Length: 376
Image (cartoon, rainbow, N blue to C red; front, side, top):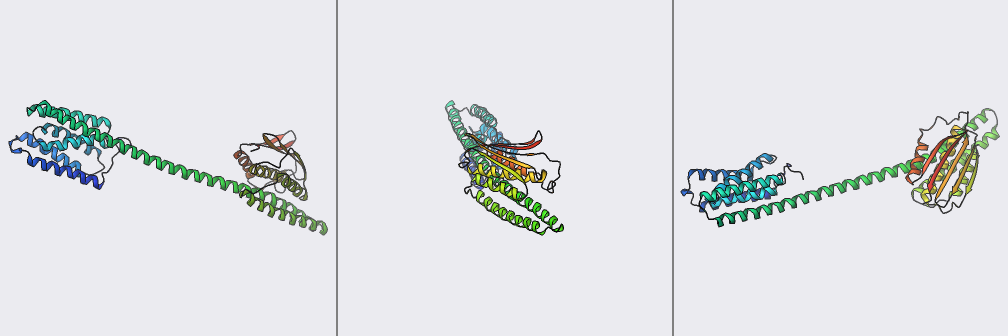
């Protein structure tokens, strides 16, 4: 805790301070104060008053605490050889100068220095033997060491409290980050399923509507049946999302075949090529690649309707690569204006969270999306 920070004394501390005031009064009763001159009595009174103000004074005023401690140190030291009761404010000042963390170590050292000088003056004025001065000096230094030990204990306790608070804040922040990451993961899964399924349904139903207007009911019925199959596949996708969130198993080759078949049923063209063994990929890697392929097919339907899409999965010893490529098209798809660009962003977030990267852009006359991931 930095010096200068005021700490309000607790009720037990207040009572202990008042006890020192009572103890000083008791000792002064045994001193022969009547033999002392007016100056000594005045200085004793100042020291006692400072002790009383320090004991009951208002909190939140560090300057008042410093003033009363300095007053006790000076006037208690100047009269300690003449009145034993002055030893109380002298020792209290030595202890408080170091023990109270609202004061600096330098302040405590200055208090001890002032007390030593004042005690020396008092001993010379009272013609006291050097042994008496050395005894008082030893007592003051011992109390000062006790105050320094108390200060260190309070500083350590405050540091421990701050560490506990920081640890609590770190745990709360970690929990918030985990919750946000999980929400992001769920949002990506839901987006991928809805964008793929609903986008295909819009195309199929628009085609069916156009065929009905043209009087081609049989072909329109085929489109409606295809829409029904796509909706059923979307329901399966939703179940798979739940399974992925529960970390259930996923067969990537089979799911890629299913995605390709759905794309063809929706009127698209797609070729799928698998190089390597994709049966033993990690669950998260498989889900990320599947959602990436799904998003790529959805984007192809939006921006290059009817274009042939190439999907190529390469499984190496250290990494997995999925490449989706289709020719650039001048045609404007019915769904080209839909969405908010969240698909590619979600793909980058999903792949990036697993230590991979996504590269998307024009390569010659084709649009290519390349997803690279470590196998585990």
